[in-house]
Length: 174
Image (tube, rainbow, N blue to C red; front, side):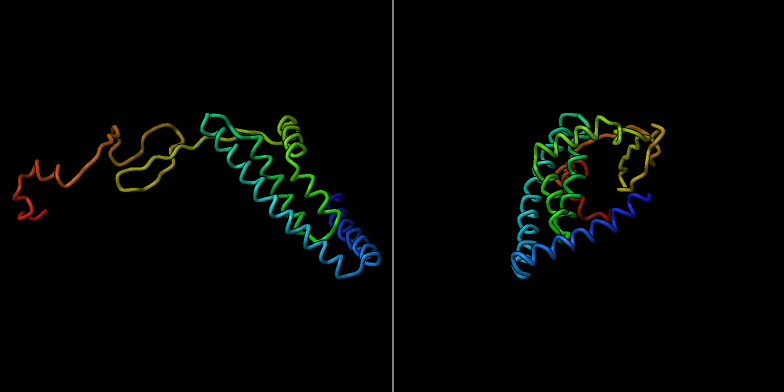
Protein backbone atom coordinates (compact mmCIF):
# COMPACT_ATOMS: atom_id res chain seq x y z
CA UNK A 1 0.00 0.00 0.00
CA UNK A 2 2.82 2.37 0.87
CA UNK A 3 4.39 1.64 -2.53
CA UNK A 4 1.25 2.76 -4.36
CA UNK A 5 1.08 6.03 -2.41
CA UNK A 6 4.72 6.76 -3.17
CA UNK A 7 4.11 5.86 -6.82
CA UNK A 8 1.18 8.28 -7.09
CA UNK A 9 3.30 11.05 -5.60
CA UNK A 10 6.63 10.30 -7.28
CA UNK A 11 5.46 9.73 -10.85
CA UNK A 12 3.71 13.10 -11.31
CA UNK A 13 6.67 14.94 -9.77
CA UNK A 14 9.13 13.17 -12.06
CA UNK A 15 6.81 13.80 -15.03
CA UNK A 16 6.69 17.53 -14.26
CA UNK A 17 10.47 17.71 -13.90
CA UNK A 18 10.92 15.96 -17.24
CA UNK A 19 8.37 18.23 -18.92
CA UNK A 20 10.17 21.31 -17.56
CA UNK A 21 13.53 20.02 -18.81
CA UNK A 22 12.17 19.21 -22.27
CA UNK A 23 10.45 22.61 -22.50
CA UNK A 24 13.76 24.30 -21.66
CA UNK A 25 15.36 22.51 -24.62
CA UNK A 26 12.63 22.63 -27.30
CA UNK A 27 10.28 25.30 -25.95
CA UNK A 28 6.98 25.23 -24.08
CA UNK A 29 4.62 25.15 -27.07
CA UNK A 30 6.63 22.43 -28.78
CA UNK A 31 6.54 20.37 -25.57
CA UNK A 32 2.79 20.84 -25.29
CA UNK A 33 2.36 19.88 -28.94
CA UNK A 34 4.46 16.77 -28.42
CA UNK A 35 2.38 15.70 -25.42
CA UNK A 36 -0.87 16.22 -27.36
CA UNK A 37 0.54 14.44 -30.42
CA UNK A 38 1.53 11.35 -28.42
CA UNK A 39 -1.96 11.23 -26.89
CA UNK A 40 -3.68 11.49 -30.30
CA UNK A 41 -1.45 8.86 -31.92
CA UNK A 42 -1.84 6.60 -28.91
CA UNK A 43 -5.64 6.80 -28.95
CA UNK A 44 -5.72 5.93 -32.67
CA UNK A 45 -3.51 2.89 -32.11
CA UNK A 46 -5.56 1.99 -29.04
CA UNK A 47 -8.79 1.87 -31.06
CA UNK A 48 -7.28 -0.45 -33.64
CA UNK A 49 -5.62 -2.75 -31.08
CA UNK A 50 -8.76 -2.82 -28.95
CA UNK A 51 -10.91 -3.87 -31.89
CA UNK A 52 -8.46 -6.63 -32.84
CA UNK A 53 -8.43 -7.92 -29.27
CA UNK A 54 -12.22 -7.86 -29.11
CA UNK A 55 -12.47 -9.84 -32.36
CA UNK A 56 -10.01 -12.46 -31.07
CA UNK A 57 -11.97 -12.74 -27.81
CA UNK A 58 -15.18 -13.21 -29.78
CA UNK A 59 -13.59 -15.99 -31.85
CA UNK A 60 -12.47 -17.78 -28.71
CA UNK A 61 -15.94 -17.51 -27.18
CA UNK A 62 -17.53 -18.89 -30.33
CA UNK A 63 -15.17 -21.86 -30.26
CA UNK A 64 -16.15 -22.54 -26.63
CA UNK A 65 -12.90 -21.38 -25.06
CA UNK A 66 -12.47 -18.87 -22.27
CA UNK A 67 -10.73 -15.72 -23.59
CA UNK A 68 -8.55 -15.14 -20.50
CA UNK A 69 -5.60 -13.95 -22.61
CA UNK A 70 -7.76 -11.45 -24.49
CA UNK A 71 -9.45 -10.19 -21.32
CA UNK A 72 -6.05 -9.57 -19.76
CA UNK A 73 -4.91 -7.81 -22.93
CA UNK A 74 -8.05 -5.68 -22.76
CA UNK A 75 -7.16 -4.61 -19.22
CA UNK A 76 -3.64 -3.74 -20.39
CA UNK A 77 -5.12 -1.74 -23.27
CA UNK A 78 -7.34 0.15 -20.82
CA UNK A 79 -4.28 0.92 -18.72
CA UNK A 80 -2.47 2.03 -21.88
CA UNK A 81 -5.30 4.42 -22.70
CA UNK A 82 -5.20 5.93 -19.23
CA UNK A 83 -1.43 6.30 -19.37
CA UNK A 84 -1.49 7.87 -22.83
CA UNK A 85 -4.09 10.44 -21.82
CA UNK A 86 -2.04 11.38 -18.75
CA UNK A 87 0.29 14.21 -19.77
CA UNK A 88 3.91 13.21 -19.57
CA UNK A 89 6.61 11.30 -21.37
CA UNK A 90 7.17 8.48 -18.88
CA UNK A 91 3.50 7.51 -18.80
CA UNK A 92 3.39 7.76 -22.61
CA UNK A 93 6.35 5.39 -22.93
CA UNK A 94 4.73 2.84 -20.62
CA UNK A 95 1.42 3.27 -22.47
CA UNK A 96 3.07 2.64 -25.84
CA UNK A 97 4.71 -0.50 -24.43
CA UNK A 98 1.23 -1.77 -23.50
CA UNK A 99 0.02 -0.92 -27.02
CA UNK A 100 2.80 -2.86 -28.73
CA UNK A 101 1.12 -6.13 -29.71
CA UNK A 102 3.90 -8.68 -29.12
CA UNK A 103 4.97 -7.11 -25.83
CA UNK A 104 1.37 -6.84 -24.59
CA UNK A 105 0.61 -10.45 -25.54
CA UNK A 106 3.73 -11.70 -23.78
CA UNK A 107 2.91 -9.67 -20.66
CA UNK A 108 -0.72 -10.84 -20.70
CA UNK A 109 0.39 -14.46 -21.10
CA UNK A 110 2.68 -14.11 -18.08
CA UNK A 111 -0.12 -12.56 -16.02
CA UNK A 112 -2.53 -15.36 -16.95
CA UNK A 113 0.02 -18.12 -16.28
CA UNK A 114 1.13 -16.58 -12.98
CA UNK A 115 -2.31 -17.13 -11.49
CA UNK A 116 -2.97 -13.45 -10.80
CA UNK A 117 -6.03 -13.71 -13.04
CA UNK A 118 -8.17 -16.80 -12.53
CA UNK A 119 -10.84 -17.86 -14.93
CA UNK A 120 -14.00 -19.51 -13.74
CA UNK A 121 -13.55 -18.65 -10.08
CA UNK A 122 -17.13 -18.37 -8.93
CA UNK A 123 -20.51 -20.00 -9.35
CA UNK A 124 -22.05 -20.08 -12.75
CA UNK A 125 -25.41 -18.45 -13.04
CA UNK A 126 -27.81 -19.44 -15.76
CA UNK A 127 -30.63 -17.24 -16.92
CA UNK A 128 -33.75 -18.22 -18.76
CA UNK A 129 -36.57 -16.19 -20.24
CA UNK A 130 -40.22 -17.03 -19.77
CA UNK A 131 -43.14 -16.17 -21.99
CA UNK A 132 -43.71 -12.99 -19.98
CA UNK A 133 -40.14 -11.83 -20.73
CA UNK A 134 -39.07 -11.81 -17.09
CA UNK A 135 -35.55 -12.87 -16.19
CA UNK A 136 -34.82 -14.94 -13.15
CA UNK A 137 -31.48 -16.39 -12.10
CA UNK A 138 -31.32 -20.15 -12.04
CA UNK A 139 -28.37 -21.18 -9.90
CA UNK A 140 -29.45 -24.61 -8.71
CA UNK A 141 -30.40 -26.08 -12.08
CA UNK A 142 -34.14 -26.24 -11.37
CA UNK A 143 -36.64 -24.59 -13.66
CA UNK A 144 -38.42 -21.88 -11.66
CA UNK A 145 -40.49 -20.43 -14.47
CA UNK A 146 -44.24 -19.98 -14.25
CA UNK A 147 -44.99 -23.04 -16.45
CA UNK A 148 -42.32 -25.25 -14.88
CA UNK A 149 -42.62 -27.48 -17.89
CA UNK A 150 -40.79 -27.99 -21.13
CA UNK A 151 -40.03 -25.07 -23.39
CA UNK A 152 -41.31 -25.35 -26.96
CA UNK A 153 -40.15 -23.11 -29.76
CA UNK A 154 -42.23 -22.30 -32.80
CA UNK A 155 -43.51 -19.60 -35.10
CA UNK A 156 -46.90 -17.96 -35.24
CA UNK A 157 -48.65 -15.94 -37.89
CA UNK A 158 -52.20 -14.60 -38.35
CA UNK A 159 -52.70 -17.03 -41.24
CA UNK A 160 -52.30 -19.89 -38.76
CA UNK A 161 -54.95 -18.40 -36.48
CA UNK A 162 -57.40 -18.01 -39.37
CA UNK A 163 -57.01 -21.66 -40.34
CA UNK A 164 -57.75 -22.77 -36.76
CA UNK A 165 -60.52 -20.32 -35.83
CA UNK A 166 -62.12 -20.10 -39.26
CA UNK A 167 -62.38 -17.12 -41.62
CA UNK A 168 -65.03 -15.27 -39.62
CA UNK A 169 -62.95 -15.26 -36.39
CA UNK A 170 -62.33 -11.54 -36.71
CA UNK A 171 -65.99 -10.88 -35.92
CA UNK A 172 -65.74 -12.62 -32.52
CA UNK A 173 -64.19 -10.86 -29.52
CA UNK A 174 -60.81 -12.26 -28.37
